[in-house]
Length: 316
Ligand SMILES: [Fe+2]
Image 1 (cartoon, rainbow, N blue to C red):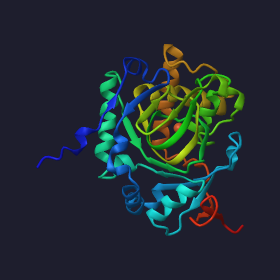
Image 2 (image 1 turned 60 degrees about the vertical axis):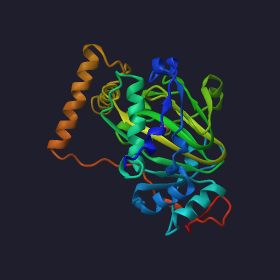
Image 3 (image 1 turned 135 degrees about the horizontal axis):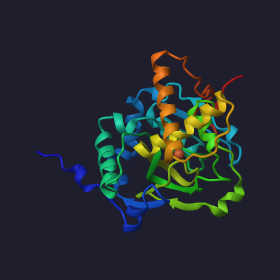
Image 4 (image 1 turned 180 degrees about the vertical axis):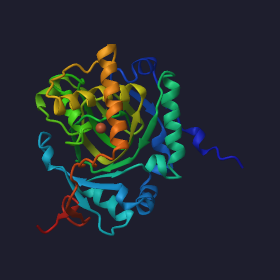
């Protein structure tokens, strides 16, 4: 018998959403949240079978400007069911990295979503796409950050307030992205609450998805319920060119004492910067340059469903 279960899931894009995809923030409707893969039972089983070193366990404080309160924890040998319980009652954020693109149960959903995005905008050409699954507490937040790749956040369960700010001053400084691309800092960036007045804000309910322009800073505050969402990260020719230019700017700033400010991709200067980055990447491969340092991720707590917040601090 042919499996027709997947055929009932899809997304609905308005004419505006199709037109503005990747240019300005948009919202799309879908029904992937009704797939049984996003039930407690299925997610607990996924947590049990997914490699534990591919899952991040984090907590954070209440102040949206205190990004240093973000920290990593240790799940110990807790079962998937116990972990979901701790998230439901605590203040935790779990990222099951690559769950959507590597797990056999989730891959068909991933493929269907990616096909929806391509169908909505024929010029959209993903070179690489990946997606994890985020499971987070009713009061969790994610601090302001800019992702390296293009992104689309598909929301499945709970309610979260999503805000995005234009990728320009004062909300976004390309030099922060330079530092990320040069592996000197994480994607988190400074935040001023006054910027919220200028933000594109939407409360994401199950069955909604949102996309915003490349490098657009964004932050999330969960509103209620156990939150489950699927963040797509997509590398495209456009994101690669933009990142190559920003990487080159960072290289010239660090090694040649220059102070480039333009992030323009087109024109002879933009082209030369892309060639510079391509040359550096080839050289680093050929001559085995030393690996650069990733942002540290030492764990400072253990997940514990019986404690307030769903965790206990590790002894110093
Ligand atoms: Fe993000």
